[in-house]
Image 1 (cartoon, helix red, strand yellow):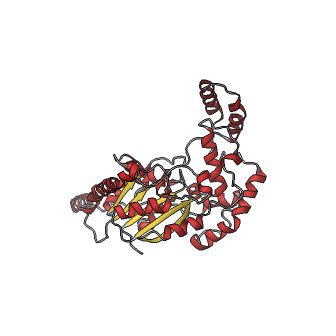
Image 2 (cartoon, rainbow, N blue to C red; image 1 turned 90 degrees about the horizontal axis):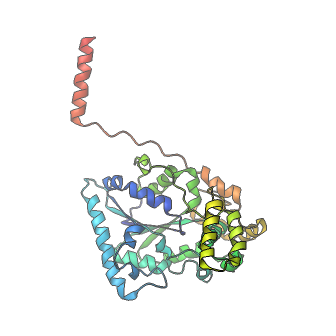
Image 3 (tube, one colour; image 1 turned 30 degrees about the vertical axis):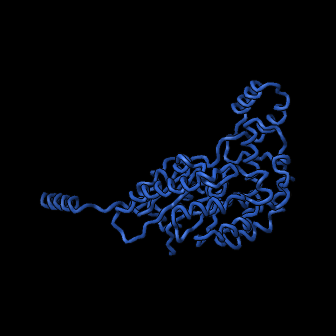
Length: 355
């Protein structure tokens, strides 16, 4: 297995919710395998986080200070893992959606999908002086990505139609292949691994175990420490709620009325199921999927050969990704200490003598 001194986990907005929550809870176990883990919340708390060039509002004067703060943060986390006696090299995982650029997908992605991906990734690699980097990119089917983003924005009170939010929705502008090509040219990147976030429907344990396999820890950790499966998407309006908000918002005259409307729709028409997102008309969804069909097939043929090439062609094929991953094997019990073994042997001899 190739060894990387830095693994950068990136994904479309919201796709890292499960992994970051899980890896945070698994951090003590990661340390025992000489793996350091840094999540986006830790980076966001840095005093000069505005110096990270992951968006149009980045502060260039703070860039060098941010680099130093990030290096110090990672060094402190690595110190918890280096004390473990092992021949394995020290590895570091950094997880943040902002490695692809801050904010949800939207109008600015129409000209170039995730335009800040290369600068944001380059800055982190340079700050950490990484020499051999693996980028793990999680994709999300384009129509669902746009749909979930739109429904979430509806909650903030926006009243414009879907086609106004994504004017180029029928053109293949959210092209993962072009994004991967840019990431591969970043200095220090040795490999880009692609995984679809829809694999999460196999369950949190299987999804996290699949990721851990990339750093040689498949079936090596006690995944029960992660707790219950979280919903991998933040709460949003249901399709019916979005239509209701879209119709009523223009009728509200004051900010107070807007707030009350949002509260009413949220309380009564929020999404209750993971895939309660059939807001798009069936023909609109089909047109979007058709526009991306060939590029998505090439994506799966090139970077996901272990998965069906038509996985992003329609709902049944995409939902089928939830049946791909095998469930992780339970971790082996920890070895007994010499003292416990001697005690057990003594008890066994006493039992035999009684018999």
